[in-house]
Image 1 (cartoon, helix red, strand yellow):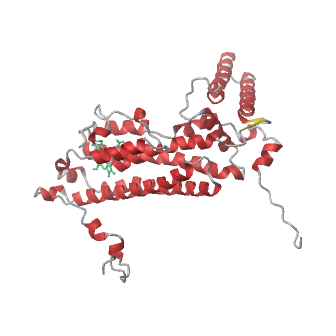
Image 2: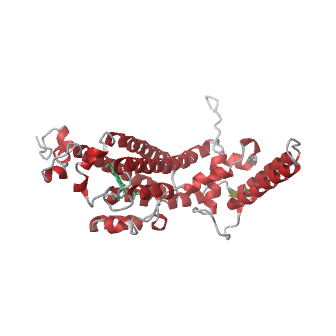
Image 3: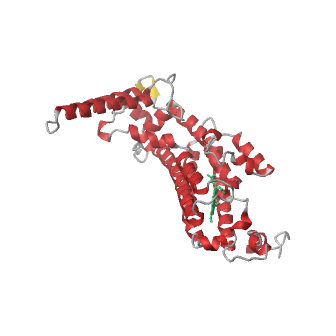
Length: 365
Ligand code: HEM
């Protein structure tokens, strides 16, 4: 029965549109009369990637709609984190999936590789949409044989990419949300001042301890102590006034709020914001792992040959793995952490503002 008939019961194959899905594999090798067994695997692996890319974009639709408002409702924050965690599970699968493709040996690949020119994963519009919507900007991209990937796309794909480039990026939405974090700056409390004082006293104690260490020569002690004092200058990257040139991609307000969330994350009210930051770092890390893993597979498959898209294959891909990072500021923050025992104590008013304690009402009242 067809699903178009009003009285029909839903049929599995119709619901999933299997006739279209399962007839969408058309090996080029067969078309050229030189049927290569492994091309079916090659097509199916790529198609499943594209299906998962579609799901990732679907998750990003809701995440970005929830995250883009002037206020992010509490109930939305939970599902934003949940959506990011789902994307991360998919990315893990995508890394693992390369192993299935690698059951095709380089010699098997050569049976049909020449038929694929000049098509390449480089033209995956959905992959570009994911990168762009997360926040990878044009200016940060590695060069591909001297040209942008845009030039290799069809007009329809280029239009989709241009539309995404004109929309809000997750990295900017994160910045705006972090910058609005309450508790960080209040009339009676300034987190950055308190944190800077804590860092300074910790580093001064460390330097004094080194200077008192008689196991080192006087020259060694002085050099070590000076090194510790110099790291205070490094910490200024967080605390410098907003007017100073910034080494961060995010605004200073966002960086300070992210640090606040990370160091005080044990407070229940900061748990979900902390999980959000951790999930974004995982997205970045898993995408980077995929890039390295794909580059290694490419090296194994084609050595140092030019890719079907025309780039210096392996070298280009390795460069993207190092360069195409999106949430690298969140990783950099680890440089600025101090042990819990040295963290400035939060004033009572901030604790009260952040805390939620429930007092059970005696029954009958
Ligand atoms: C035999 C397997 C594969 C080989 C030899 C291969 C090779 C390459 C090469 C050489 C490039 C650089 C562009 C070029 O010159 O074409 C590239 C880019 C790319 N490939 Fe693959 N690839 C393979 C499998 C896959 C699979 C399964 C996917 C999944 C969708 C994929 C997705 C991509 C993407 C998204 C890029 C662009 C990466 C970027 O610009 O950052 N590739 N591939």
